[in-house]
Length: 210
Image (cartoon, rainbow, N blue to C red; front, side):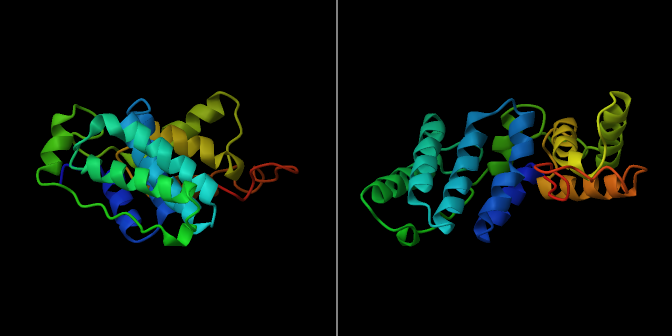
C-alpha cells in the first residue's frame, strides 16, 4: 500500500480505541510534513478522545473545536479521509459537551477510508506519502545518536524523546512512532552510556522515555 505506515498505524490504533497511541503515531509524519494542518487536525481528534476517556469534558471540547478548525478547509475529503464526516462529528461532540453532556455519552468516531486513498496520498506530493523504498531505521538511529555525541549532548535514557524526534525527522515520518521508539530504546540501552546516563535528578526525564 502507498499509505504512510504512520498513518496506517494511526487508523489501526484509533479503531482499537488506543487513542493516545494514535495521537503519537502521527507526530513523526506531522513533523516531516512541516506541521501539516490536516495531520494536526487528525492528531487533535485522537487527543479529544483521550480527554473523553479521562473524563475531562472541557479538554475534550477544546480539542474537538480545534480539530474542526484545522480540518474544515480540507472538506469534503482529503487523502482518503471523509473530512466532512470528521468535522461534523467534532463539531457535534464539542456542542454536546458545551451543553453539559457527560464525556461517556459522546460516541467514538469511526474512520472509513474512501476508495483511492493510496492514490490520494501519492498524488499529494513526494516525501512520506511516496512509494519509494522504506527508510533505513537502524542507520537513522545510529546517525542521530552519533550527532548528539559529537555535539556533546547527553546520550542515554534521559534523551529518548529528543532522539525519537530526530529519527522521525530523518525517516520522513514514514515509520510508526512506536517502532521508532523501540529502536531508539534498544540502541540507547546497548550504548556505552546505558549504565549511567539515566541518573537524572529531580524533575529529570530518566526512566520515562518518549
